[in-house]
Image 1 (tube, chains in turn purple, yellow):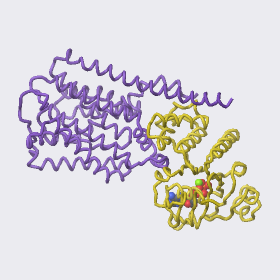
Image 2 (cartoon, chains in turn green, cyan; image 1 turned 30 degrees about the vertical axis):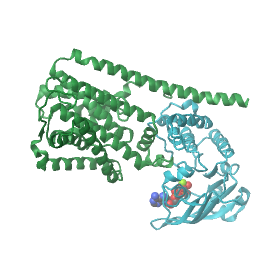
Image 3 (spheres, rainbow over the protein chains, first blue to last red; image 1 turned 90 degrees about the vertical axis):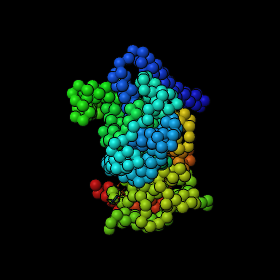
Image 4 (cartoon, each protein chain N blue to C red; image 1 turned 120 degrees about the vertical axis):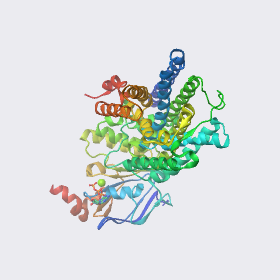
Length: 343
Length: 242
Ligand SMILES: Nc1ncnc2c1ncn2[C@@H]1O[C@H](COP(=O)(O)OP(=O)(O)OP(=O)(O)O)[C@@H](O)[C@H]1O
Ligand SMILES: [Mg+2]
């Protein structure tokens, strides 16, 4: 009798764990399929403009996935991620131009710098609650923008132009074709997604989500709230900076407003918010819908100065938050939810 | 006698002019179940928060297994073996029931897979396994109470602080709750439980402590407490009159 009970007990755990790992494996399979399809895109997309849009979409997908690690899982809403993006961009370019450091190393160094800055800022800002944290991130990023605008050694408002070199994977410079950039940013998106996937199944992921839902209850279960926020912040900043470095190499010209501006902070956060904050697929879904739409509006309605794309983003976000506050990804779970719901 | 598991020494806690805890001392032995009762606003939850580390005492000292923990944050006290539930239920609503418990069991298992295994066992212990994959936000409130208990148990505590876990339960649910607390007691965990309903506390506890206006006014067996004139006046009198 006792042994039978024991057997039935462990069988529940075994069954549950098997199901949970199967679910996680399916996610891996799904992403592998997406990646495969995406990898074939350059065969069909030969038009430069369209390829450009695809590359930007993947870039924001990676960025938003990185933002989601802090904002989605850990619940710390930053609207100042442009500071990390800018450090990645300026760091990589400056290291290359001033010290001849190859961009591969430069982007890692700048990303590490950004992560370090995130820790330093977090040390002060994570004592602030909720909205105050968000406001602080905006203010700090704006301050950084003003600083860079006035620094002569970074080219001030004029910005920096990467010196032209021969096409090469070593310097990550490609003048003739954009296809290598496509594969670089595809790899970056996959890396960001994989990091989020690993976090979801690991100790930190559980702790961060607990901190987001109820920090005091998390603390009562032994979760170190402060370290959780710091860890999430550093990882998030790291990916953001790599994205910034990519952007600088891709456009080969940067200026303070285009990499440190509030617009970038918004574009990093919006796909996650739209697609589903704190979910694995949300940022990807959001980016795939939002970025092409924004680019199209921008090119049909007006130049980048008019802000037509931002109006479109705003309208979309308002619509989604009214109709599906959990984000678009919740549409996928509709069937499961209604089945599980109580009468 | 061996050293007490918990020693609370002369705790004071003021909220402005209000003395929510006024020179409260209490020892709890390993595996002992203490019932803490008292009228509304007596300072019971304040006392719990001070033991768990959520509130700092204005004055006084807390020793756990002989070690001074007064300066430790709640997370570190949990690490040492103090777990708690909240009077107002707190669940991680965006996470599934099982994931809620994994948050607790990860404290003792660094590997998420073993933590999940342990969480499953705790889930069965509180008889919630049918709800494993439900979002915690969708649970009924008695279920949420049991989830909170499971989460606390998953941290493998030596001392469990239960703040009105039976409040708002129907008589049948309360019976289930009592059975559950009995099962927890059998595992050797010491418990301090706050309850308003005397019938629930009495059969479960080794000792009852009565708090009124921030002070301990009586302490003893259930029989001693119910006949203590001070207690009758302060607490039981209310319910008899009501
Ligand atoms: N954070 C606070 N700030 C100010 N006063 C507080 C605070 N917390 C509790 N109090 C006051 O301290 C007193 C004790 O409160 P406490 O919650 O500890 O009582 P309790 O015994 O748990 O009551 P109940 O049975 O209603 O849960 C009450 O008068 C309460 O109003
Ligand atoms: Mg209380």
